[in-house]
Image (cartoon, rainbow, N blue to C red; front, side, top):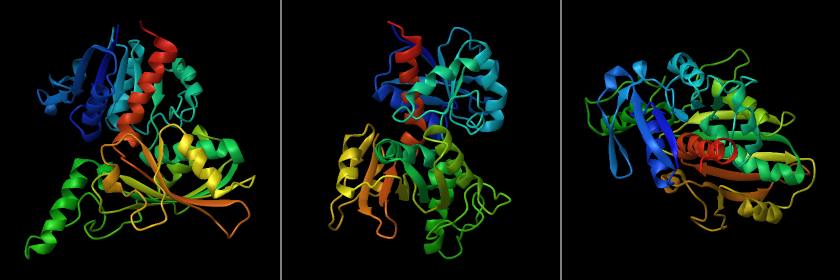
Length: 340
């Protein structure tokens, strides 16, 4: 037997990836429905070799459905997630709405699977921010071995994290640079993204950090360990898909780079590609469509006693969003719902 699954926001980038990954991983499905707003009603979505036609989220009855994977914004989630949860359908939410709610588990299955037991308090499970998800997969096995005290991370985040309109803006601005008179003014971003980098993701906060940077701090503490100090600088770069991160960690115990490399090689969800030669590392273009979080450039930080640097790359539409949500659904099925 399988599960009855609803994908909410099925016409967006993340919703379509959820459908693709459910099919690729042969998730046990008895029934599946693609839900969207009325403006997208009737849009066709692929699920393996099947074609689904979107149904109206506003009138959908979640009673009798096992799980709903939400890939809509926080405002819509605030309206519809409690409806699904009250109907007995477990919500796995990709928005930021419930991530910091103490009664809602925030889960990366490779990192804190035991937190799944807390889902029943609200019948909702939160998916972390895309930049946090890939980082904590790498931090957890190193933390287990040497206790991470501090993390300094700079992100290089692709435009797909802002949705289809952002991807279109990058594409059109790039074309416009080479065609006089067809320049495209910024709309999604505050400045030109083509051939540029923007050190600004989400809104600014009172202390000068952006909300994206705050998310990485708060979510790492909730998922891995509240005692870890985290400082982040989040940057949008002209890449369509795939987030990259330069990560520096300081640990309580000394951790040799060779041991760190072996620990990461054995860790779930990680692929280590780390050759000290031209091209011996992974870039965002190479990770697109893959499930893994790639780690490269592992090296000792000689400026402190117990420091390491490494480079972390992942497909943000997959591990940063859709894949992690499907992995949560798999974990929920194995540990809690347990259908035969």
